[in-house]
Image (cartoon, rainbow, N blue to C red; front, side, top):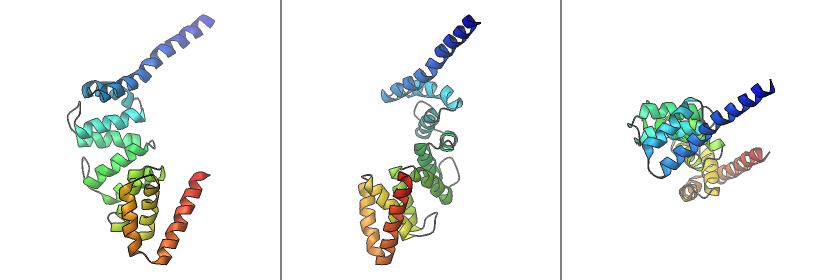
Length: 193
């Protein structure tokens, strides 16, 4: 009995190691520009539910690196990772919706996915959501909302968000600026808990 348990444990370790090594090998292949190998390493992992591999495979399909460019396939892989709370995949899926690549253009869906990524601190998603709120594309125009997202992206070092925030404040009333600052403090306080 003990021998069977030890054998099972040894088999588990042997079969578990290649999965982890597959991702690392895929990443190494990607970094050296061997996109075909990267895709072949990521594919089985992605099928098994590895969100990093799903996101990376989505990117390879989006850009046509190591695989034929296929935006529909990219959306499919991004969605799998995004539905498992991967902020980078959520941002990439939002971009696909925003641009109508591999899927029908849908600004509301783009805003939904940007918000999911932005709520996790994804700076580019925060900037994108601020832009949508300031222009009314996909969501209602709301300068207080735009101020929140530009402020958060700016705090993370996004220079474009800093510039957009300065321009936005010029259009806002003092009351709107005050509400926006309170909302930002509330958002940050909720994340610190």
